[in-house]
Amino acid sequence: MSSEETYLEAFMETLSTLPHQVRRNMDLLRDLDSSCTVDSERMRYLHQEYIKQAEAKVLDLEIVYQQPNGETGVRTLNGEEIIMPTTLEMMDYTYDEDMYREIKHLQEETMQKSDEKVSVAQQAYEMVDVTVQRLERDLEAMEKLLQSNGGFQTKVVGQINELAACQPTPGSEWILSKILGFDTATGLYTVADEDTESNKVFQLPEEQVILSGQIDSLKKGDTIYAVYPETTSFYQATVVQAPRKTAAASNNALVTVHFFDDADEHGVTHEKQVLLKHVIYPP
Image (cartoon, rainbow, N blue to C red):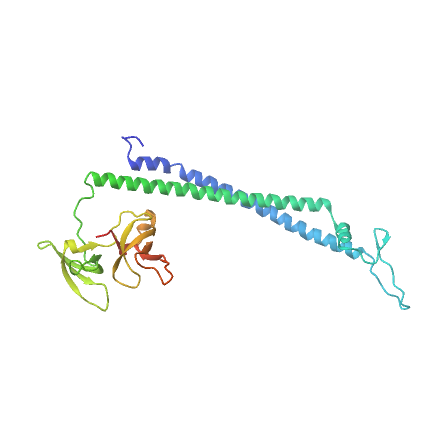
């Protein structure tokens, strides 16, 4: 990207060719699918015809029969007297080389086209994924640029009913709360404990209140504080899998984490999912 080109302009230039590329792959998938359908129908027909033809040949054989006087009739196969043909003999007798070759050829063609469909679908996914990753990198770079220029340094005040982490007393654990108000004169927040059994209300200075869900970006390995499942308390955790930026805007976006000191009796720390809106940077 040149110094005179904005992140948006650079991304839009990359994005402009994406719909055409994806459409081309979708059209190719449709053509391959239609061709596979035709081949499959033809193959199914040949299978049925092969079976009918084999059954007809078997029915043409003279059946062993027993006369009233106990004598047994003799069945012939290709002009030779045979009482009971072997399996290989029966296969050779019913074998149709031309039809078998066509069926085998159609099977190979169908498998090849199916593999090609998977490959084309994977290419389409990778094209979109690369573009999304490019957007995420550009957004992160733009955020850093704005931060370095003071673009993100404006003071953010929590709104009524907004979730926040609060520390009731200095040094105590952080708990999930809801903002009831903010006094601009004193700089004090009024917050209510989100624990329904507590119903406690606190008046706290700004340094003891952190707006929840204000995470700009996360990546695997980041250290965060998150609300432990089925509690209202924040505990230190490590990010195992972060939501994409495109999904982070959702109110129900989830982050997969390992909580510190959360190993079970076998020493295994299990992954847990927490809501992104219940995550804060380490205080």
